Amino acid sequence: QLQLVESGGGLVQPGGSLRLSCVVSGLTFNYYFIGWFRQAPGKEREGVACISSSISSGSDSTNYADSVKGRFTISRDNAKNTAYLQMNNLKPEDTGVYYCAFSHRPCNPRMNYWGKGTLVTVSS
Image 1: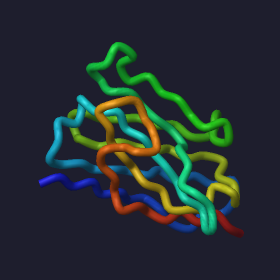
Image 2: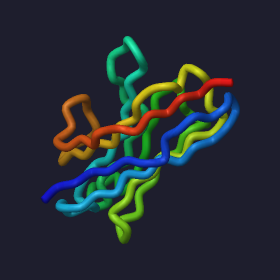
Image 3: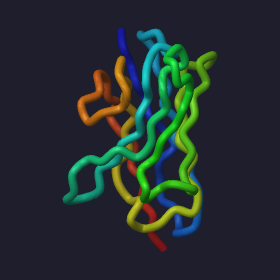
Image 4: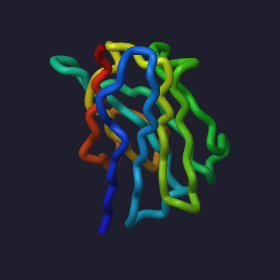
């Protein structure tokens, strides 16, 4: 049975850090591209970061939305079936529900599998 469970969200002050985790069971973890997406109140969901499949030609390559470059880092631990999003220097505009998602193909808005999300609130 497939399960994607995000954790690590919470309330943090501007300039602070959080690390989100996404633990997965029920799929062959290293085959998949992993994306982190977020949805702010009243806005559409947007892609934040992506890491390629560990068996693809661009093994474990990463890319980021311009708004988070230099502040966020996506990573994966295939031995633990866990994906991470390290978020530093957080800003109020980073507030939203963060989702991990998995796809057989490069990250896109229609990923195959989605978690239920974890809320990140950046506020003083």
